[in-house]
Image (cartoon, rainbow, N blue to C red; front, side, top):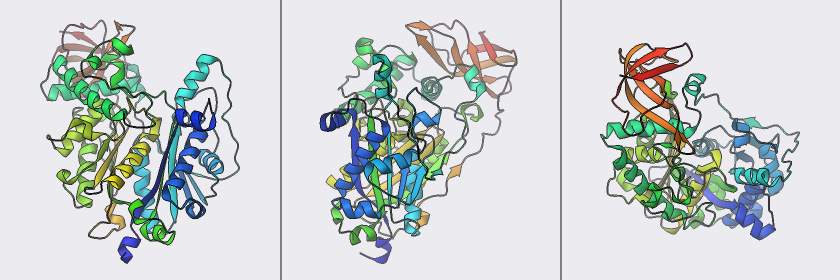
Length: 505
């Protein structure tokens, strides 16, 4: 092993836990996030083949931020130092404790950062872990079961939370009160760009999600494993009700999970010193992170400059082409999040099922900010089984506002690894021609929309509009017609200072 290879970041242990696995192994009926994350951490240590020596050398523990601490609370509390609670439960004593950022991009984003710190000698070995027990919370509420997940700690930790407004009050007031509504705008914008009707586009989404469901059936810890046909995904059976136009229930992320995942990263040289087998080591070749502003500051919702830049940059830094990549996991909260990465890769001959390693957030499950930790676990396992081609992780946060990409391989990088293999994060500015919180009046045209349903009854449609001057804004359309596509319809816009109201022309 060369000096350059010894400094290269490698993943040497991976592990997962779930509500079903902890119930079977430990009899835990109501697993907490600490239970799940610490069990995954122990599994990752065992997976390395050098649990005791590796555990003693872990000097950094980074925990993915819980939904509880990301603005989505519940009645059962949370440790006031989640990284420390995990460390104590896993029997670890790292010098540095870190609490991660908000967003599904964060596991890959933080792994990119840890790789640089490892190469620079700032840390020896890091445990990246996360969990969610939203499913346990929902079951406990339904059963009237009392729990207390609060836990004090007097240790310091580094808080990596950044302020990034995914949705603003302007957007909330126009009906974008959930991610399905936000992504519905993106989905219908892409459909418009492709000039597809609603039925054809729904069939395309169903084909993609059917392929993903078949993969979930192969994963031990999948929360909603069921091999759905494309036809069933377009019907009401199995609780697959219409959530909005364009989504049904089983075409969106499912958060009622009990899942934990952990990966251990160090340098190849330290792994060798610990006696860890070479076939356990999976190398991080490159990483890239990008972000774009909120929905109301974008001119074109049908594309993602953050995805396009991060995918291209990570491939360039790894000295690879998209056609070189073998196993891939694309963050799959909604079909458009997958479709835009597929477009960036431009590999039309790949099988649809090959774009996920877990089955995705609808069928494997969506553990909040931590999903891509599970994807990284699955990628490491895939590359250990067949390392003939490198693999890729694409992790997404917000409404495709934040994108993190990593390229991994079973072999060291031929040109040697250095910190410049991790790109400087690219924060793209608001699009020229946009106005924040834009209130319009006069003529406009509908460029995209999302139409919510509650128990089968349609509500006011959220519109993505372009005013007479070509400036985008968001509006509401009361009593929208359900029997026709709204894209391209002309409207008259009026504003009351809080909302834009549209009337069909």
